[in-house]
Length: 73
Image 1 (spheres, helix red, strand yellow):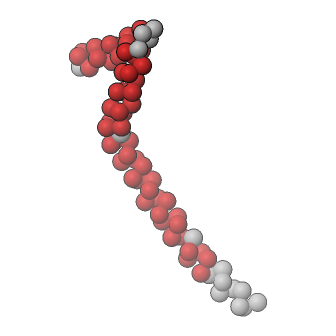
Image 2 (spheres, rainbow, N blue to C red):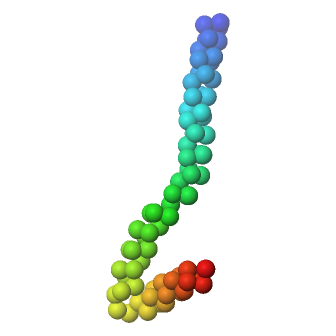
Image 3 (tube, helix red, strand yellow):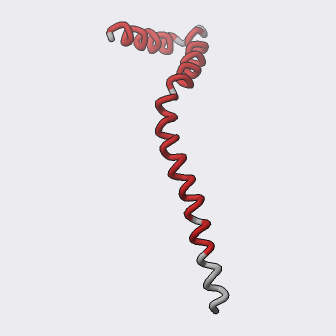
């Protein structure tokens, strides 16, 4: 039985390693949102394409509202 006891010990040690990596990724994820403004620009450009398409006045109006909001600031 004592032979199986040493096995569980290494396992707990191995478990903390993956867990330590997860918390490290969490803070990075929090920083990612701050860096998302760049990806958002790409999404905006994608939204502009459909808005330019005829029959999408709503998309154009939404973009106009966003621009006016920026001007207000």
